[in-house]
Image (cartoon, rainbow, N blue to C red; front, side, top):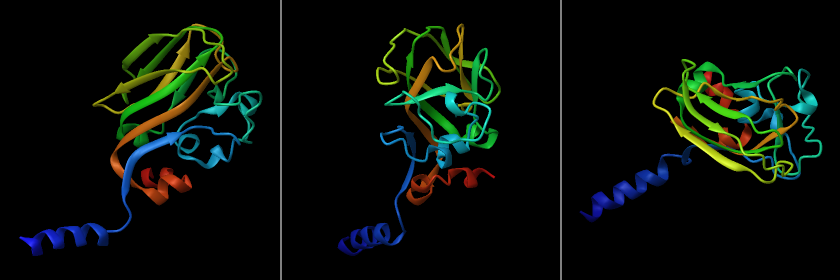
Length: 182
């Protein structure tokens, strides 16, 4: 019995680095290079300050999060995940801070609404978020803000995604998760 237990423990240490299947984007201060991170690389999410142009890591006046944009700085804000990445998402959570109210909707990979919530105006410049979470058996295709002009008026922070496939610690730390889904 001792030999078996020793073998199991030894195998645990010899199998390589630990795996994590949870990815987090926090936009800590300083802002850092979020453009090469997992969220920017696996979605159309942009900062309002770069909307429609190249990512420059400009956070503007938001000390805690990111003012959202989907690449078109007008109308509804539809953040979509790359399809292969989206299919692997089993849970997503994000903090929302808005100056305009409206509605937040998460969709599965087929575009069906799996979560909808009325947004409460918190007006905390990205630092006063309310958390919204959803678990899905059919992936998470994305999320959208509707009912008002959200781009530049709504911020997100503490985006957490749980993936079905394990991701090595090195991959999630270096922002190279996108390569796993090509």
